[in-house]
Image (tube, rainbow, N blue to C red):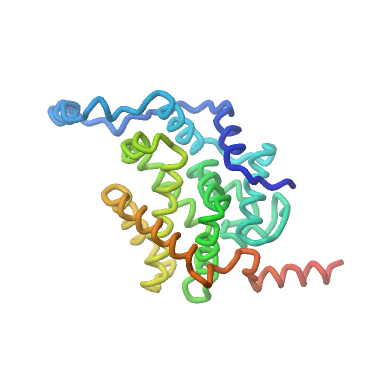
Length: 269
């Protein structure tokens, strides 16, 4: 299957899809005198221009759009993501190979129920960037640690859910307006949150039993201190770029169970 090389192709396709779900772009309603007070304090200038509001609506709708094996772009997206994360090409639609990148079972479609195709778009956007691809390599490498391992895509989908909540609640609106970009800002938010979890997971030697606590911390920094953590991620990426010993390339990452699968396949032929 042909791999995707341009994020614009994906984004234009997803924006043109006929997504039926209606969404409410307003933050949760406040009642009584608090509602009046908050409305008085809310500057009208913070409202998003129509074009940005429409793109925000598309992203929220994508969280309700299921992964579809019959959609060529959906299949190209997940095939490209698999290739970037493993160096392997054209996986079958169903099979245990999806567990290599941290899906929970043989059909990745079942894992996207919480955040829809948005949960595929975000890690793909990071993998399609030459600058941020090495970061994903480091995260995937840590996910296969014997002592600190975790299912990468399950973690990634939880990060996407945190970003989705921030998008729905208007937390990202000011940044979206300043940058005049919706997809770019949400991708920045995704990478900052993922880096926060990765960095703490590595430094604090976290394990799966710590997931709940670290996700709560990630939700808090997303609401209250996102800009600083975006800066932290940008600094990390610059250090990766100038480092004489760059991050391990994803194609060089070899997993024992990939070899086992290949050996098993050879034995059955």
